[in-house]
Image (cartoon, rainbow, N blue to C red; front, side, top):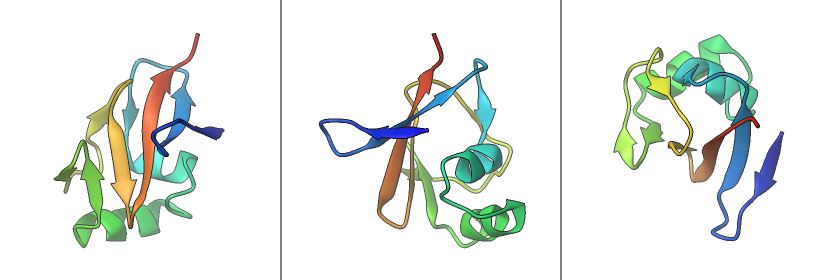
Length: 79
């Protein structure tokens, strides 16, 4: 699902044009489940494109970078 890029950031491919932050955290194995995703976000541990994000439903698209506890993933579009 994820593959490393030269800059050290893993990539994760999504099928649709967007994915919600909570879903991405689970898909990228940055959170085990929705409860953990919510807690990470609520505690200010999730950044989107370098900024702390507090909305679990934030819509993410290709090119966005999500970071949790020093681990980052870049979203890419399928196809």
